[in-house]
Image (cartoon, rainbow, N blue to C red; front, side, top):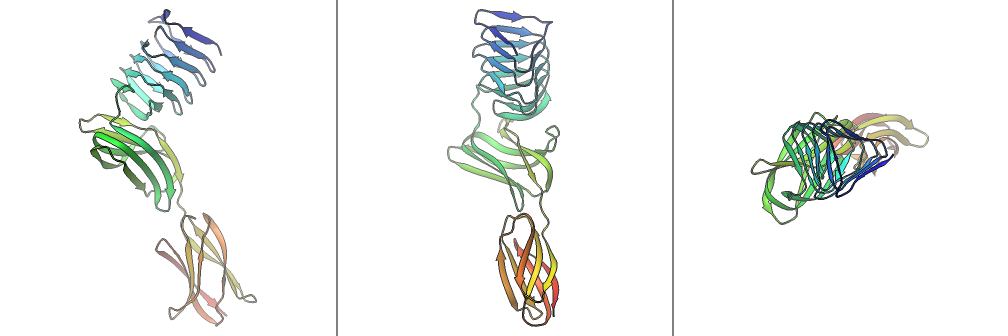
Length: 308
């Protein structure tokens, strides 16, 4: 839990020795830093000041859930770059990677990148779009990803990628950008697949010249509930029909009791919660065969019921 400070006139250099900042430790660099491996453990706090050049001869590792890292200078990594899940590298500088890169956390508001270098993450270059809103939500039709841009420059298209492990990604759709715009633009995409486990999405924006940037990953769990209508029974003494209505809880449900001639005898609108709901309806006065209908999202579920 100690602290290392390299002042503006100081230096710490070696092309064979490594530097590891332990849990809760701190590193502040205002001078020259050159090491073989640089490893940042959980809960460490790192500051690389502006105009500072840090050279890592081999691998840079920022372990999972380390968010106290600020790089305002230049970081050159000659080997692999690892930024773990939940880790955040903030500030505004430039990171160059010669080897393989794993940006599973967030670096300068980008995330989810992985591949062979050379690779550059440069906060100092203006982003081609000004992203002002970026969110995901569950709806009756699936997971809905929404985002807005305040401006776009040379923007060709957006790619929507999906993953369940933050390692293997697949492109589920692409949306055409506005190329150049200074007006507010709203975008959305609905993934109708049921996400029974935590699912991760990310947006990658690609320029007309092929350059691209990926934005933060968003996670969601949208397990869609199959609508269902079941009978508990009929209370003859109180003239009541007891039902179990199972829905996603996102929209109102209309229940009707109809005779065999198609005449509605009972109509009731309910606002159920997600899952099973016990509902009581009035029972028709006349003996006979009836149909109980459950209507939601323009879909109907029916069961026959005999009233005696």
